[in-house]
Image (tube, rainbow, N blue to C red; front, side, top):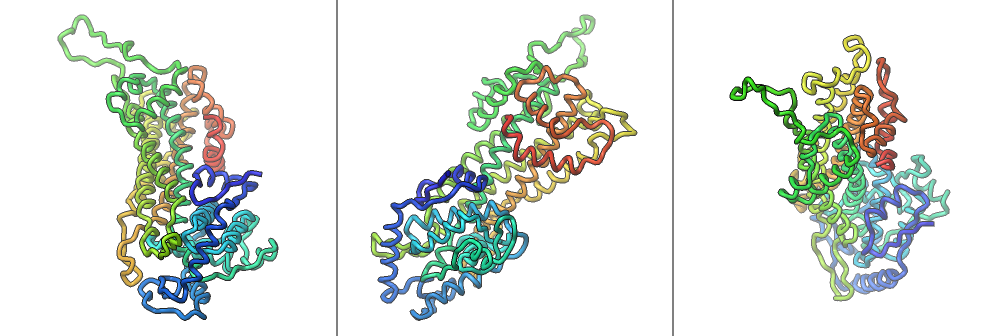
Length: 519
């Protein structure tokens, strides 16, 4: 059985992927963390009566000047969870919530939050049983962390709220009985420790990194395929031209394109371009038949997709730092006999990174949509029938309807491209006077990523139609030929008009979940 050991320092994005994609994967708290948890908890308990510590024996936020009596400390933590579990809207995707639970447990076992070993084990049991709390999408501003969303997770740990278990939404109390588990009674500081941090936004962004990685690989392959279908010039992806502008992402994309297209028989060498002039009009201006340069959506693929690669690399680094960080407040530093009050829960790092990644994915989507238009617009490409119609243009409509889907989906992503990172609104009686909106940024980015898969799926369908019209499958590069065959294995050629919406949904799922295996 596969296990992910959580020690607070070594969780990776790939670990999260394993957890959310394989029900057999279990998390295990590294044994070396237990003594640390016990020592820090002991330090906290020893200081409950002698010190005033925010969120342990005080109220929260602007009410921090209210000192709480010792007999009310447990009730304080329960009130915090119940009062903040007020999210609205549709449930966040279960895989995001599961990932957030894993990230939260990992940061808690670092041993700076003051939780008990019992709470850590309880959260571990929820993860391993795949008891996934229902967490509404709206509610976090991303500064004291993901307070509202994480409060819904904490609510389930104390036996309240609702969870998704075995694909069925049901009361937490019912599921706990089924699994032989009991609800947990929060100890001083533990409610705050569960909800004070960036675990939801970081977890969503971690999963998005994996999705964007798929998107970039798909986009490079559709770009390569497009180059073939227009008999593009090979110098646009030559090594020399990209060495002269040595951005890492740009060079990476160009190299990938060269590798993918190495066996293609469809690209043009510029030296073969017919530039012969009429001998009778050597001194006159005259027009040749060939296009001297391809349009930008085909010629500038490395320059446009390069920033996506670079942004993804930066985001991955930030996320893996974040998911192994202490994002709690106050931080309990037992080694130095102190309670540190600060702002590690502020989500700006994640908000900034995921917004940047989102904007590059929008540009990727726009690139794909422009190529769809190029191939479907006979007045522009001068080589393919209108809307890739393989039957009777005028009577049959080909891909005309599908293009509307690509256009509208891209337009929505363009609207969503505005950075949430700069959309701060003060709240909490102006205690939280500048906020990150990191969780909303990640959730909006998730929609943009989903949209990109829709548009890329339509582009691949368009390119498959182009192959069927051109009858040049044998001349395709090996890699693009595999994609063509994979598309045609789930989506037959369109000749006569037919109802396509269910087929398109099936194609979308195939592209998101399966086609990567043939790349």
